[in-house]
Amino acid sequence: MFKKILIANRGEIAVRVIRACRELGILSAAIYSDVDRAGLHVLSADEAYSIGAAAAAESYLNIGKILTVAKRCGADAIHPGYGFLSENAKFAQACADAGIKFIGPSAASMEMMGSKTRARQEMDKAGVPFVPGTSHGLESAQQARDVAAKIGYPVMLKAAAGGGGKGMRLVGSAQELQSALKAAQSEAQRAFGDGEVYLEKAILNPRHIEMQVLADEHGNTVYLGERECSIQRRHQKVMEEVPSPLVDAELRRRMGEVAVRVAQAAHYHNAGTVEFLVDPTLEKNFYFLEMNTRLQVEHPVTELVTGLDLVELQIRIAAGEKLPFRQEDILIRGHAIECRIYAEDADNNFFPSPGKIETLMTPAGPGIRLDSGVYAGWTVPIDYDPLLAKLIGYGQDRQQAIARLTRALPEYFVGGIKTNLGLFRRILEDGDFQSGKIDTGYLDRLLAAKVGREDMGVEKSVAAIAAAVFSVLDSTANQTATKPGAAAESSWKRTARTEGLT
Image 1: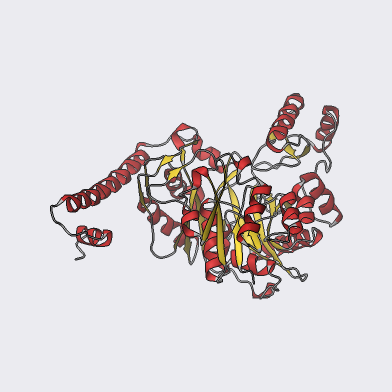
Image 2 (image 1 turned 120 degrees about the vertical axis):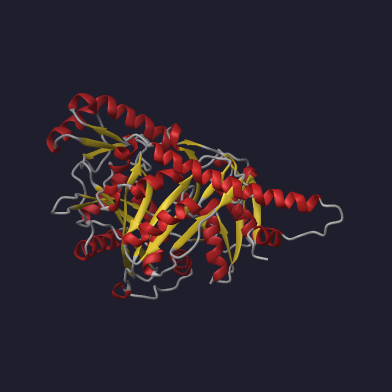
């Protein structure tokens, strides 16, 4: 087993990995940029090292600096988290060349699955079903017109090196195709440094369902069940759940076996996710979309229903251990739903809302898990993705998971910045969501509906209650601190006295 792991990331995922290290008796080393000097992951780690300026290119994306720190601190492995360098084949290879274990797949597997067109070519050889379209980048607008005419409109243009909805365009007619192709190529070039774009048939109102896989370095591969990821905004996931309301045992088995075939075709090891588009009709046909060669943001929902610690398993696999279970040992128990909590202004087109977190109240209680990377007094920087935390509700069934999240959300208050907490209250109260009638267009339809006065009233009530509570606590603390000759009183005693516990 490793003695020390460097976490090449920040925020809640870095804290999550640090916790796994601590449970395994492994020392953790954090890195931080100038604006993250007081970050929760820095305060949580056994060691922390400055990595450079706020700009990601000078810090969290700087391979040379990260490897220098890893060597200097004596780390024998690096966990990349998600985002930043987690799917960068050059980084994985650089770690291998430096004699430091990369906790993830090989550079070769990353390269194969990192290009959507190459992945389609390889999956075609492996007999994996994928959406009809091109398996190579489009060479001209005329080629795009010919393919689109053959498979029929609407079609989707996608960046070969893409993700997160960048370089993607839905095209409904031949008249729109040329301008959409230019726009997709231009956006792909800006976002990924690669303007290659391919074309596929657009499946209207599909379900986006992914399958978690685990593979060790001894040839053993299993699937851990699906995650429903259809609630998206601008092709970015917002809310995930396990199991999917659409998937039955037979479909789960079929998708899982295909996901294992994908991983084996890519000579994959460690944790990965195979994503599918599913036609929600009676046939429930599913098509390979892509493979994410890293740990997913939404991994906690899988952990809750399987009882497995995916980060621990990642570390054990990277250390050369075999999977401690077989496919038939994996059971899904209960239901879990995750809400991604962002610092963003839902009333201003979800614009990022950086700034100081003045107050923070977090939920707890039965069936509630919170993976967070912030604390009261922390200033959320504008330089990175505004994800603050992930709130997960777990229950014996979907109804109980929804009920627990519905109870927990009003207990969650972040003062000083805007968040999207109100959005999840709207989703959980929506009849279509409660009945499982969701698809990739669901959230756009919900957001198009006018926000009622009642929703706004709930927001204000929660904010007012939270502000009042913290006002009382602050006032009590100030009175104690200014009382002549008063002995210092612990924050625990102040809180207990205020709440009538002493």
